[in-house]
Image 1: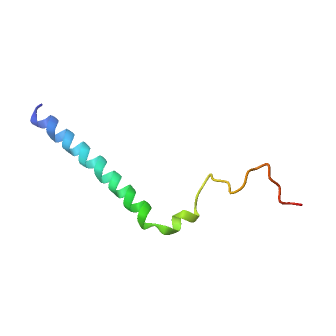
Image 2 (image 1 turned 180 degrees about the vertical axis):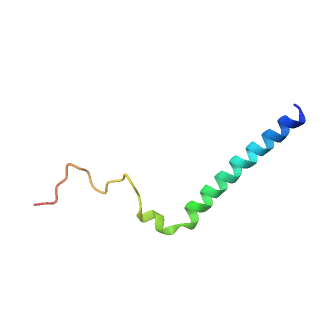
Image 3 (image 1 turned 120 degrees about the horizontal axis):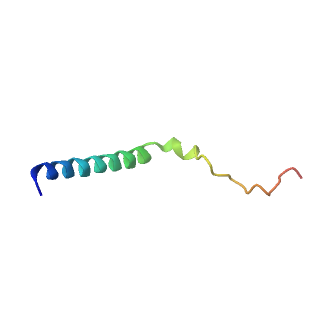
Length: 51
């Protein structure tokens, strides 16, 4: 492989690794995000609590 190929591969792997680490740190360091789950219903839509 040529030197430019090694450079492109190194930059790509480094970028993806940095993005993965940033996402993991973001999830672990933001405790209040657990209360903001979007698209998750707490009870099924066929259950009514109006009795």
